[in-house]
Image 1 (cartoon, rainbow, N blue to C red):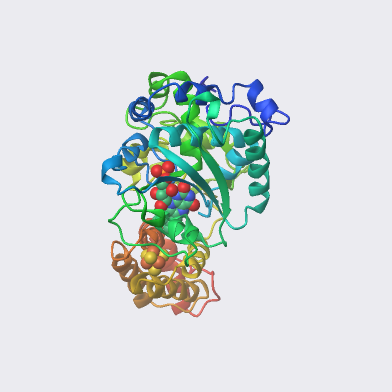
Image 2 (cartoon, rainbow, N blue to C red; image 1 turned 90 degrees about the vertical axis):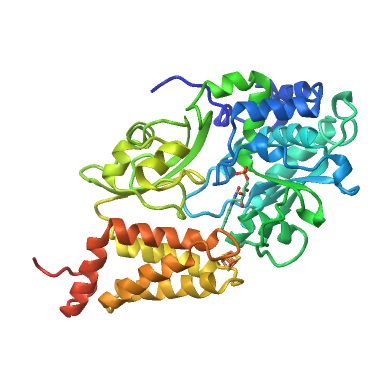
Length: 434
Ligand SMILES: Cc1cc2nc3c(=O)[nH]c(=O)nc-3n(C[C@H](O)[C@H](O)[C@H](O)COP(=O)(O)O)c2cc1C
Ligand code: SF4
């Protein structure tokens, strides 16, 4: 395999990698020392020039997002907050928990650096409700950092003071959406809010707030230590750096892999994931977590793992990097029904198209799965998906619609076969002989 620097997973697998002693042996907090000797504008400039893009799903340039915080004279005396999004509930995505579990000090260091750049005095790591075990590990790491004076008052004698807390959610997928996360941390029901205003201008407690994903913030120390040029030299022009991919499904070696962006998708499948199970052929891959459009083998063969290529080749997205592989044993009607069960359950219920539409889509899919659906149901399914997309407060609606649109279009034969077998009175799943 190609040689490239491991940025995020550098010390994963080293015994005791989560402790301050071991992390420091591998250079932890050197980048924070360096950053605190720089001006906030200089730090932001390095991150901007590195081309780092948000790893929570949308791929928005991180340095650019940081520049959206209004200057002090336009904040009306309000403080700036940094929220680390550690909600990680997207089906097929399990990389952030690896970051926090194996190297919590890397995230803490990234948050110190980001907070210095943004003028933040107090920041929070918002964790998915089920991550109590991760919270315990993070809290231990925070205690170690406080004891050494790496957090709290006058860090490294720089004059910069900064406090960092963990906060556990109550276990709803929608709390990963940044405005729902803000509502939740304020103590309200975790429901998204209309944008604008964007959080960078009016976020938690009506103050300017930057929300960044765990992996995004964990990449910052390496960039500061090695320079933006070194980061830009990895990956592609528009998608620089490395990315963590959570690989699951019908592969020989499921796991989290760090690879340079721009790596051919077939290489991720065959070299890192160990290929398909013996004797099986590829049917489909969902490249970026359950919300993004599914890809066919022909599309997979042409695509690279970066933001541009996946979109150009297959109209899909890199998303959060949840790489879900399905071989020829997969029943696509069953797979989509399973996905929609999740979305129908997790809709927060504020918008009619999302609340009603995701439940309707799930009901139709259950009928298809159970051999009770007609052609009209297939038309209605597609129609519902088309009418949810872009008609809701947050992107959850589109996240429920895109899998339906892509499965039904790209694997149409399987959906039609279910209708035909139902019409022929065959038991669910049995195809009509051709
Ligand atoms: C339904 C939904 C769920 C989301 N879940 C997560 C999540 O679990 N973790 C995350 O970092 N971002 C999630 N996002 C994206 C966040 O809203 C936000 O864009 C991200 O945290 C910004 O960080 P980044 O710029 O570092 O990517 C979700 C978005 C939507 C619409
Ligand atoms: S799109 Fe769905 S999840 Fe998002 S606010 Fe509307 S109802 Fe809630």
